[in-house]
Amino acid sequence: MIDNSDVVICGSEEQKKLLDELHNNVKIVRDYFYDDINIVKSRYELNKPGELNVLWEGLSHGGKEIFKLLKEILNSVDSLKINVHIVCDSEYCQLGSSYFCRSTYKVLKHIFKNSSVSFHHYDWCSSTFSSIATACDIAVIPIPDNEFMKKKPENKLIFLWLMGIPVISSDIDSYKRVMSEASLDYYCSDLSDWKNKLESLASSRSERLKYMNNVNTYLKANYSKESIFQMNEAIFFSNL
Image (cartoon, rainbow, N blue to C red; front, side, top):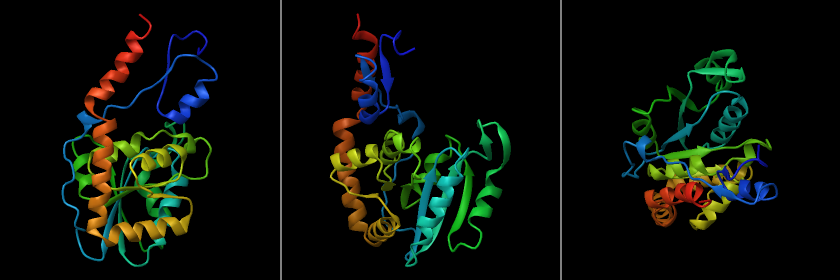
């Protein structure tokens, strides 16, 4: 399929490096998120002193590894009351997003049993997601030690940034690159990193504002609507 394609598209510089070995016309395409964003976060005080509301968003299917890591990370923060708001599919399917399915809420209830962290589950819905997400203080993107997951592009990080949400992530290559380009180091390699960075960002409104100032500068330079349209134009018109 690659040999017979005029152009190959991918989601990150890291993916492009791999595909460049297989094709001489590989283009990076950015996801267009603006139509999915109804509200942008503008207040950076914690909703309640001593309490942190954390967002996680994604697909539930096959995500037990992520949910277990999420619990481990949030349990490590003992200086704050943690509420985690999980937005994903209502069903958790173990195979092919369609087979051996059960309620995601029941899966989460089992994972967070005997945890000091309070979890809240919401179905992913474009009309409500922005409201739920921007009511949270911080978002997290933990990635387990899984080679497939570690190849993810930066799309989710950018999506959350565009909604005005400070994000702490695992230190996979795409997240490290984008964070570094934005002069940020809120990526984590181990549990100690997660604990320190969550507590650091939660403890200071000025740090959260500084974080988002860096993000907004980066987004303005790299993720304007015009720049995304130009990427797509390069795909369709570069071979004419």
